[in-house]
Amino acid sequence: MSSSSAMAAPAETALDVLRRIFGYDRFRGQQADIIDTVVRGNNALVLMPTGGGKSLCYQVPALLRPGTALVVSPLIALMRDQVEALTHNGVRAAVLNSSLDAATRRATEQALENGELDLVYVAPERLLREPMLRLLDRCQLSLIAIDEAHCVSQWGHDFRPEYLKLGLLAERFPGVPRIALTATADERTRMEIRDRLLADGGETFIASFDRPNIRYRVGLKNNARQQLLAFIKAEHAGNAGIVYCFSRKRAEDTAAWLTQQGLKALPYHAGLDDSLRQYHQDRFIKEDGVIICATIAFGMGIDKPDVRFVAHLDLPKSIEAYYQETGRAGRDGLPADAWMVYGLSDIMQIRQLLAQSQADDRQQRLERERLESLLAYCEHAGCRRPALLNYFDEDHPGECGYCDNCQQPPDTWDATEAARKALSCVYRTGQRFGAGHVVDVLMGKTSERIANFGHDRQSTFGIGKDLDKREWHSVIRQLLALGHLQPDPEGHGGLQLGPDCTPLLKGEISLQLRRDPTPARKARRSASAIDGAALPGWQRLREWRLMTAQEENVPPYVIFHDATLAAILDARPETLAQLAQVSGVGQHKLEKYGEAVLTVLAEIEAESETDSS
Ligand code: ADP
Ligand code: ZN
Image (cartoon, rainbow, N blue to C red; front, side, top):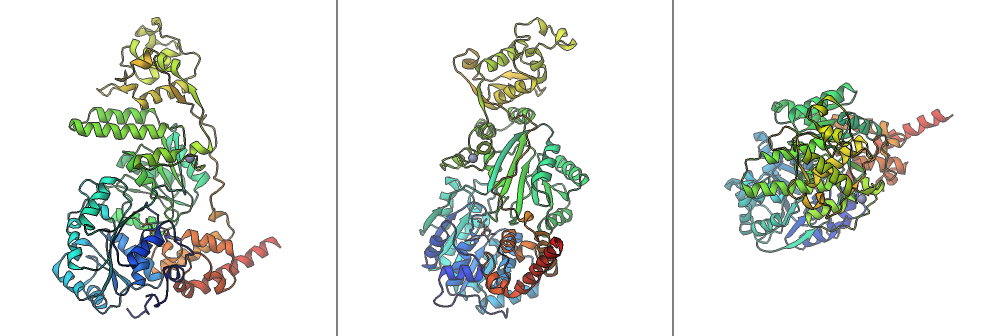
């Protein structure tokens, strides 16, 4: 603990600290207001999406106010990451949790008591023990930050009983401003946080939950694995990503298959033993370009900023789950992809599960609503952002220009007649046949199976020759998504009429459906992507970063983020002073890595000159 204090000099402003310590030029969104509130000694509730920049909201005040900032966080890996990142910026930060050996713990406690720490991260259960509280009584606290504040909510998925007791911090440490932070958006959680953690008042800051750097895409499944491979190869070669799968087996199989195809892919799910799971997670964090094939168990508490894509090979559980899972992409603010494929069989499967649910009525209704919103999102023909954000009660004007529907607006067509034909064919054939058979009847295909059932003598036989097979499947999928059709409750894969299809069947209402794109269309690279990989020297600089990270045993992004590497290559600094201007290069990192970076840049320069001569 001998390093000199990163504590701001008396006259330093928040902006000075941002520039000197973190190397950034300006605050994002409401950061400046939030920081100002806390620096003035007031409480704040901060709701910001993942990647929005919550950490700086307490880290900067921690350096501006006298004393040590106490940061409560439930996630050990996240605390360690943050402390590593802070230490690399020359900030005196430490963690107190169960992972420490006794000697380190005592040394850290001593440093805390001596006022030698700018920030200390503590898990809630440790914090609430009396010896810890008494130690803190003897310290000067600059502020208390409560991260992942939604853990106080009993309704959410991450409820932690210890969080309820954090309310006592108000009485125990009067006059110390508290800042509660979360990426969970809904109103109920927000109220609970306020009631339980900030009952004595405070300002609320709600950021937009839009993630402008994420491109949302939902495609149709035809061969999911091949589609995934083509997507990764065309757009994310060498990038880190997460592939979410429905089951453990699918996660395993997908990882094995991607590995066969020459990619670095690893499975992650609750069925793996702890050490292997941990090993895979470590590789994901510490190596470049690892792809994790995971069930939903993966992601919570992983702070990796340079995940370039999140892919869904199966439908997520809800829009909320989709938002959280896709939100793990692009925390660093650089372009990232949320990519999903789904198809008719996914809807059948998920509607089936719902039909067989043993839950009580209220729960079933909630589950159904959740599913309807998700399917409506998938089939949505307009900009994805309003469709996604409306779910969190946020308005978005649409036309973002950075989602599939904005970039390739889908055609819609009047499918009223086609829908009526499909529904009546399902009805006439007895509501027990699957999509394949129904389409064969509609198209007037002669086969033994059709003859055996006498379906070739029915009025709906051959009434749908105007559409091809793919188009009929598209109609049926969308009718399923809209609930005009439903799977048979026994789970044999048969189709039945949905409860509200009568007006449509009778021709009392009309129906617009989206026209599916023809599968051959190639995915385009986004023009707006800042593409580090395309910059000359990218590989060399990344190699240097990886080597340095390995020497220090930290993840590469602790040395510099991708965004910073790209900015360095773009700026091509030749002096330390020029390098200092690059976003993400603070004073401490300049001193530590500046010379090495300039050397690598000079080598890159020399190589490119030899190449071109
Ligand atoms: P959150 O905790 O809200 O998910 P972080 O605090 O981890 O987000 O910040 C996300 C990323 O954005 C980090 O890489 C961080 O360094 C970067 N960042 C935050 N604020 C700024 C800023 N004002 N300028 C540039 N980068 C920033
Ligand atoms: Zn859009």
